[in-house]
Length: 134
Image 1: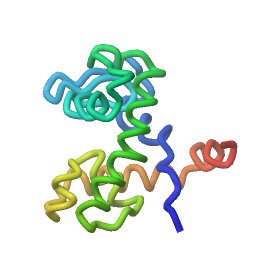
Image 2: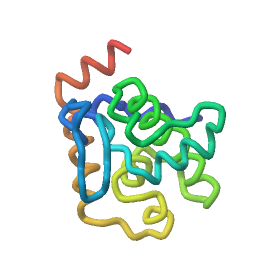
Image 3: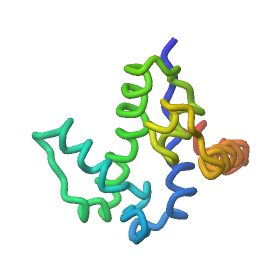
Image 4: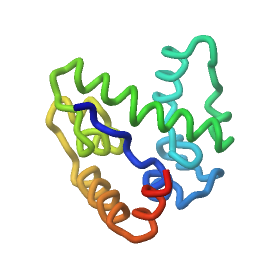
């Protein structure tokens, strides 16, 4: 049975507290989903008909589209190509810590803490209500 989608509003809340102008200078991560330049390159490689500039990710519609695609399309494909199970946990660990690290089994404490943040948010009444309203 195919895995459902990761609930992206919880990810956007963790990543940027819902601020579409959020910027992480160290990682050059942009917008709601804190999309990094390597993800922008992946998007452009898979979407040559709809390329974006990294600065475009400050636009919420662009950022939510790209971050959702990365979490729910790109990461599962990359995991399955390497024989790694496509689980909610592996997707979230990959989004935060890098899909290559999940494939190699090198999960950082930071990525593990990120997974717990997601699980905690999803257990909260606010996000349970949002998920039911989909």
